[in-house]
Length: 166
Image (cartoon, rainbow, N blue to C red):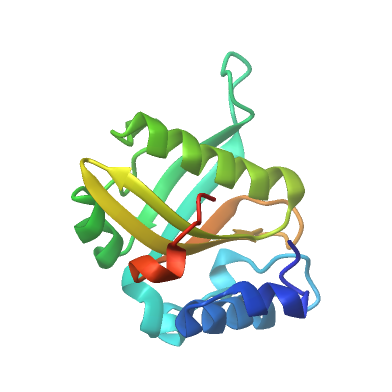
């Protein structure tokens, strides 16, 4: 999925997520990816509570995974929905194993491919049905080597995610 592709925008149901993707595109300029420093939270106040910033690094050689992820910021809406705040903790600290592996797969996919990810998801966590739309966009301090991810995750009505398993 290429964020420069107009069909990418057509798949995004939430207009505020679509607006954030357009903002991300504008902030990257001629670079492959925008830097974290190019994003000003004042500019995307409309989704600030739904934003997650993730620091990305190559995992140590003894790790079974190629990437290491650390939460740098978790928006208040995401923390409230999840029931915990993992700011400054690693993905390994996420308490739900199935959810952790789903997130790891998505984040690794973005790091490996360099392409943003978009999903409409419906899943049970902690005996609760969660329906949400999410985008995960790469960031790079030097414009080309991914060192952070920015995600926007917003709740959606059940009917919007019906049949979605992504």
